[in-house]
Image (cartoon, rainbow, N blue to C red; front, side, top):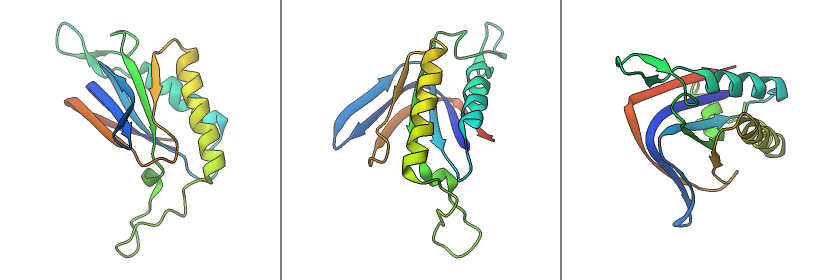
Length: 145
């Protein structure tokens, strides 16, 4: 499982020029599911991300989590995170999980963030999405489990 986590001032997802989801201050998370990933990995990633201290306190130190700042979550499925670039010039997606399993784990992650009390928005699994955001920092972390 691979997650790219960005601290944002705002973010939105559109499909076919139609706004699907948007958030204000919070985290934009690109969520990639690899073959063999499971519910335990989703649980680990959601818990880890929810506690990451990515936001600055009054002393400009990264001591605050998304919960501490009342931030929102925008979770976007992205199978391309699982690409291998080892051979040739065309990415190989052999490590990406089958869509039906990946979608199940993606939906579980959305539910887990909501269960933790986060205002959680999402993209549309499998759709061609346009994502717009203002990365605050820039601040981007990568979590692999």
